[in-house]
Image (cartoon, rainbow, N blue to C red; front, side, top):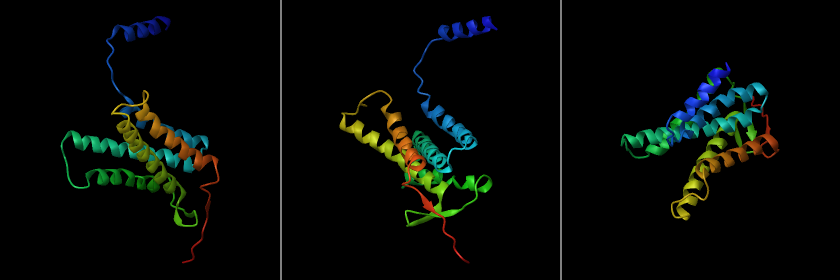
Length: 178
């Protein structure tokens, strides 16, 4: 067993190293796997919803990039692809969750998981746009390494903290008589 480990380490050093930005592949996969684990560990559904919204926003950007590489352009393409990606949250309600709307901020009557998913997507999309704006203001260069990744993640974590650690997003259960 020890020889096998040494052979593995030597094989890693013997191969040529190339720059391969794997975050576009690994980040959503890790996030998707962590959602199931978080639910099993008892993390609040709202926090899981924020992360799920961020995942759906990442997948929306994947679709946009896929369409750009093939030069498939049409009016409203980016908005339509992002909306289609975010609408896949409905599949969660088919098998996993039941839709139980609650009153948020005394204004919105929506399910808590869906509400958190929307805010997670908004936070991630805002982080991507904030990075683009900061990069443009800095002459087309990032301020520090991995800024493109860290800004959206920081906003996602902030929204997770708001939903999980504060009372800002408390909701009221409202009963509607039919």
